Length: 144
Image (tube, rainbow, N blue to C red; front, side, top):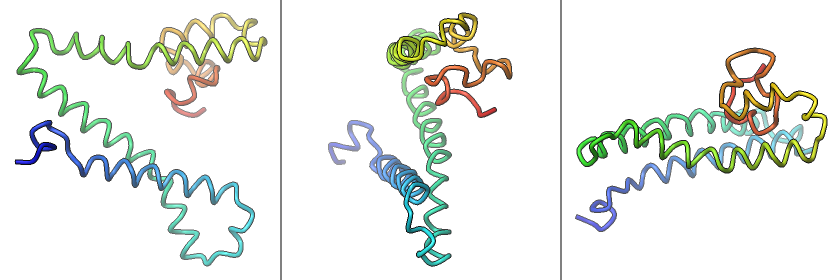
């Protein structure tokens, strides 16, 4: 048994993350590049399939969260509560910092205090008028 296996690390997950990142970079490079018309349709089609990188990230995240949750159920007294507490403190601080930066940079957001509040509470996706109302929420909410 290798050290990686003892630590519970799955190297193929890192490989899949790498493919997902590469796919996203290629798609954005193709979108912003000016020479895409000069590429063969086969190459363009292959590059556009990199858009599936986001979906691959969601699959990887779901898999690793369930794996982590399964492992912690054996070790912790309240694994579900602890899971949500850990997730909140992993996501919220940077999310709130992003909201603060956005509101201070684009002061027009002050006029829409309700949109700021629903974003702070992570419920901005509950109503069509508040989805993506602040830039930081765009990565955590569906598109309009």
